[in-house]
Image 1 (cartoon, rainbow, N blue to C red):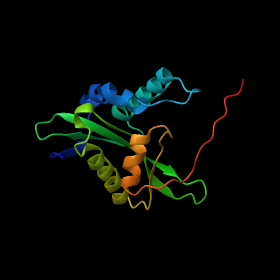
Image 2: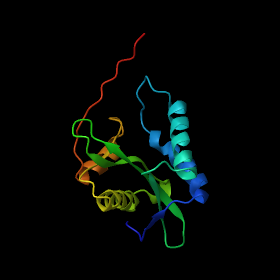
Image 3: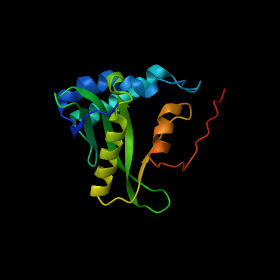
Length: 157
């Protein structure tokens, strides 16, 4: 059931909330060559920076209820296309808290990210997702996102 969701820019005071739900980024079968703890540490490091001393062209938004209960976040930045050198928006991270699942929070955050990119004049917005994260992939495809690159990895002995 969808609920009324407010989207606002994140503040340093949101850091504890964001870091508390960031491990949800890796709640799927991670590839065998990945270390979940290292992934969580890397995510926390990047998000800490984005909330404490944001790099240029980086934004974090919080989804919350009318009473201010946070339900999720989206972390955005700008990237440059390898082939055309065109700048575009990129969704670095998006996480919905368990209590926000199935209530329209992810869709609201995605819409906010698209507005963020559109308002900067970008023609494209991208994101990366692990192949095994089927729930997230289904949402992205439902929202009109399509595949572009597929990255293959081989663990060397």
